[in-house]
Length: 542
Image (cartoon, rainbow, N blue to C red; front, side, top):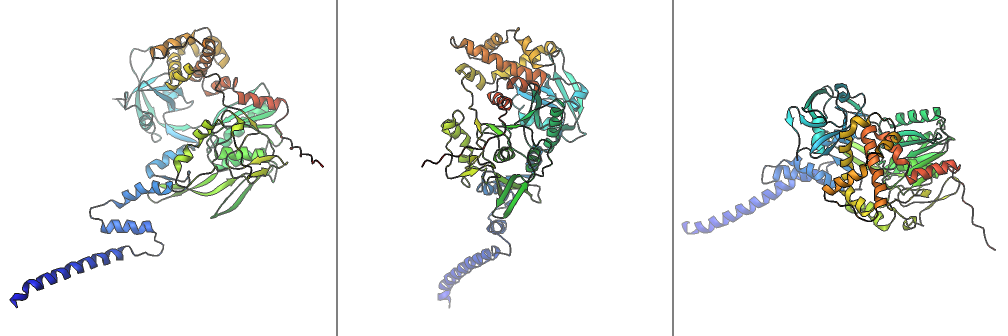
């Protein structure tokens, strides 16, 4: 028998290897057998968890994969990690917890641009123009002083304390303040005032928790001031809560008017109607839009246009007509999943075309519009003739994404010379204006309105000072277009300094003096043209 030993050894060795391979494959297939309700992702997770060669944090791998999976859907579905969820939701909250300042990072330092009224910083004596150089006795300047880092250091739970040390212009030593963080109101209406004693202008930045209450308060002041018509400025408004937009639209629409409807494969059609109890059903109305007006802003513009309730002035809106619903996971993360599309009362889908999983092309749409000349010429906008709809009184409107205004106002680039563009790209206007405001605040704080401050600035030679400042930064003024440059520089510097000294309301009042879209809105209201008229039918030639 001994002569057969090598042969038998080889035979049984091969048999063992084959058996081992079979057992391994069998065990692997057992692990990934589907269970009721499981998905391929569940099976893959289990396969990695029990079969992978090295120790593996499967949950961490899945966390990295989640955004990529959701990115394969539409451009607005989004996965939100647990650590980002609170900050994401805070964008539309009525308040946040912090110290109550607005600031900008300039020369690697926190520069306070505004103190929020009633906030903790006002209570302890911080002033606009102060520079925060230390936080909790630790130096906080230089490359590490970024917008994000500053927010983390200054924000915090209500009732917690933070110590800041500031450099104040004219003071030789640092000033130290102990601040107890508190709730800071976040206003979503940037400005509300009456133009020419007749036309109420309200600029809505976003549709947040408190927006409707702010809006009604502004409208009440308008009525008390004898307002005869309303201008709602939604330029730059990227949207927010649908319910808030519905409340606002309801104030202007008759009972039974459709505001918007939503529909999706798994979401039955849901129609939102006006209840007829609005307070401004007959008030002349103009809505201002541009390419950054999106979502809830487009719902307002779309329902006003389709119900022939007012006039839309400006440029074509963004084209976001997808409805997201948040779903939270047990680990605190969430996904905002698109569940339906918005449709205007005439049946137009607000959403512009997109390809699933192709976010880059979608993001480039605004740039493509710019390059096509859409911001500058209405003729550059190609309406989709296969998507024709009719408003309540029979006016023609088009689908295909976004809301096309009734009156187009091009973006004004005629006043922007190469010199103006060069200094703007380097942010020299805002930097110089803030520096000038900080050094001369004690002289300018006596002024209460933009016109008082502008009259003062016109005597201070700030344009020449700015050109010297820009020259120090490497930009020499040209020998041509001096008059055009001088006028434009003065307007831009005035606007920035007004904001730094008097705040947003007076800043917007001043800017609106030369804003072509606002001026057109006033003209439409003055001429009694806010309510659109039915299109004349083309005569039939026999």
